[in-house]
Image (cartoon, rainbow, N blue to C red; front, top):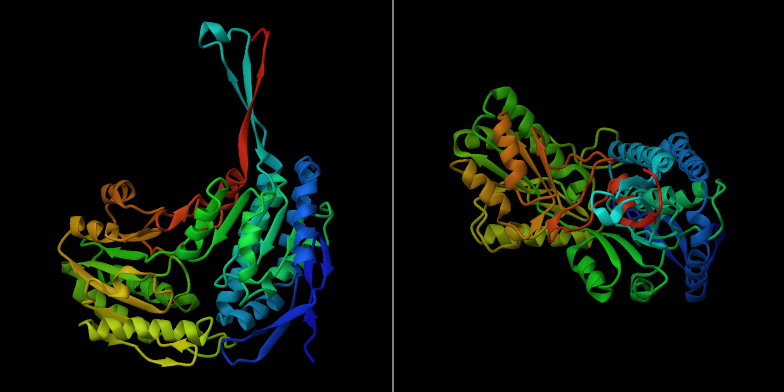
Length: 481
C-alpha cells in the first residue's frame, strides 16, 4: 500500500482532501500518491508568506546561510535515495539523476555563500556636482516580496533548488509549485527545509493543480514570479500580470556549430561525442540539449559519420541500469509528439540517418539531415532525443543559421580561434555562448537565461537574487567626506 505524501504549508506538513498518483514513465508503476492542497490551504500559505516578509527579510545572514548549508549537506547524505526518486518519477537514467542531486548540492552551497556576502551596500559620493557637497549615497537591495516559483518536470530537484535557494539567500518568502508529473523531488526539499530554523511561513511546497494556477499567479501578494517551462505558458503568465516581475526561463532549439578550424580527428571525435551525449541526455528534455548541428562544409561529412555512430552507441533502456544513457520521455504523449514531428519532417523530404522509432514513452535517439524549412523540427523546440544536421559554407552562414530562430538560449561553438570566439560572443543572439563544447554546458553559479522567445531575466544563484530584489538608495546629508 503506497502512503500519500503530504505537502508543506508554511513550513509544516499538511494534507488536503484529494490526491493524485505519480507513475513511472518507464514501466507505469505507481511511484507515489500526493496530497493536493485545498483552496483554503493555498490561501493560508500565501497569507503566511505575505505576513512574514518583513521578519524574514530582516533575518540575520548567518541564519539564512546556515539553513542553506544544512540543505546542501543533507542532500549529500541522501543522494542515492533522492536520485532513485528522481529516476522513478521522471524516467531519468540513474547516472544523470545522481548528477542532478550533485548540482542541487552546489546550488544550495552557492546560495549559502552568497547569503553571507549579500547586501553589503555600495557607497557613492555625490559631490561630483556642487549641489552634492556633503552628501553620500548608500545603495542596498531589498526584497520585492514573496516569490511564486513554478518548476518544470525535466530537472525536478535542481530547478526547484534554483527557485528556492536564492529566495532564502535574500530573505524572500517563497511558494514553490513543483510540476504535476514530478512533485516528489520538490517535496523532498520541504523535508530538508523543515529541519532548519527558518521562520514559519517563509516557505511552502504546494503541488497545486495547473488549472488553479491563474488565481495564484494574479495574487497581488506575490509580486515576483519565477517560471521555468514552455514559451507558450511563460508568456501567457507574463501577459496576465504585466505589472509583476517575471523571470521566465523558456524553451530553445540549441545549436552546436562546428567550424572549419575544428578539423583534426581528435577534434571531431570530441565534438561528435559531446553532440551525441547532449542531444540525448534527459531523453533530449533539456532546453539546451543539442537540437541543431551546423557544420562547415569542410568538416561536415566526417563529422556526420562520427555523430551518427556515437548516437547509435547511446545505451537506451531501463533508467535504473547504471549503463543506460537514454531513458523514456516523461510520458507516452510526449514521445508521440516527437514521433509526429519526425514523421512530418521525413514526409517533407528530410533524410533519416538513424533512429525514428517509438516504443511507449521511449523514442529512439534520432538524427536527420536536409530538414526543410517550415516543418516543426526546423522552427520549434523538439524536447526529445532528436538532432538535425545542416551544412554551411563558412562562419558567416553558420552564425546566420544560429540567429535564424525565434529562440536564443545557448549555442556551442567548436573553434580554436580566439577572435572567432569573441565574434560569436558579439554576434550570436543567445544568452550564452559555449566555446569548444556543446550548448548544453551549464554551471549553476553562472547567469543562465535567454533572449527572444527563450525568456527574460536570469537564473544562477546571484543573478536570481538580483531578480528577487530591488535597489533602494539612502542619501546622507551634511557629511565631511
